Image (cartoon, rainbow, N blue to C red; front, top):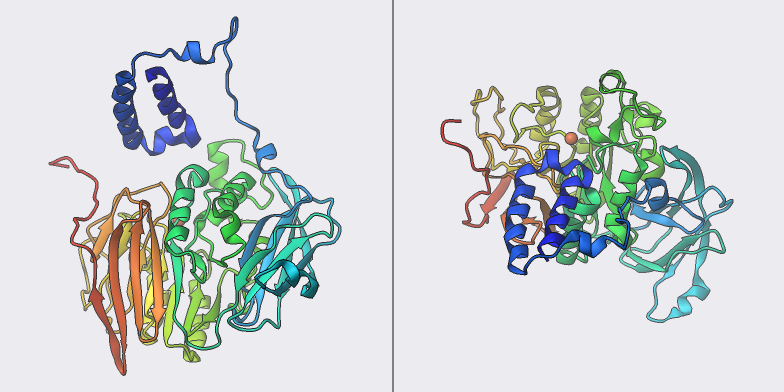
Length: 490
Ligand SMILES: [Fe+2]
């Protein structure tokens, strides 16, 4: 068996340029597997795969085949364009042979007779040409729904239909709920990120939504990467709504999918929001009115059972968004306020400070006592406690005085990992893929960061107190931080 096992390790090395990104991990795999293989005795790869007079060479299925659209709906995604208690947005993809597209919806029943009560909604369809070819994206916003109700829906063209799929509307009341938060997925989404998503869903199968803090993929105009992202979420994306804001990797070098001719070309090319963003991600059109039209659905807010969730676009116009944020927070009837954006206010990893973003947005978070800021980008994990005045910490980052009680989290769910620095964080991690489960229940918010294998890595509780900053109860486990081994003297 040794030949087979060694060849598996070699295949892993060729997988998506892994040899550059994960050399130590794969060397470890090889060192582990080779002796295991030897235990089972020798087995020649040539005897396994060679035929009488030729050797079979495997070759990848072309991306345009793997990710080809058809008339059958795929990439079905739930989002919200308006109130989660009364509306539900659905988007999906087909090929361009489809001339009309529909969603049918009914209150769910235990048996199949609900189909007699289904209401049909006609979709708005948008043509999109990616680097792999043309497709149609369809969008329906279901309205007039009853709160706290299990619905069943399907999408299709009248002949080719999806399965009937459930979703549940939110309550109009401030009721307990749970959601999942992911930092960057970004790289090797099929091979290395999908297991994190599956673990998160297994851990929180009744989550109200899945929140992605940018860099869902590595190249925002590469259809194969979106194909992997949609496949990783699978039918869960059709059943549990997705909240997402763009990161720098959703800003790609062209709006047409054309690739540069050289690395130098690539550096020179301007980047802009991935061409599919608005066709794929249907979000409330309540962002900054000063934003140009193509930035719609990259900054927005929605209210969910007593929590205002605000998404910001950390690639564009910080001051415009700060003004809008102040308006959104000045009129906020919710008990809890969570903000998400891609680039962090306080960076975990070295050399990745974002002072302009911090100067524009942190004063607003402080003024309005935002509870929690969920971020990504740094490819490591860091979670602050409450910060006291510390005007000039090592590394040059200026921390403002903050009595607001705002907590900041940077996380990563994908396999690309950077060094975490030594900044002011209560809990940090490196070389660790994580997901977070956050439960809001009355005056308490429970936060848990879990590793890709489901182990509890970090936790805290926030408690609302009238007229005072939140109480923070630390619940992180006593286990040591997962950090890279550094050579003495480095
Ligand atoms: Fe990023």
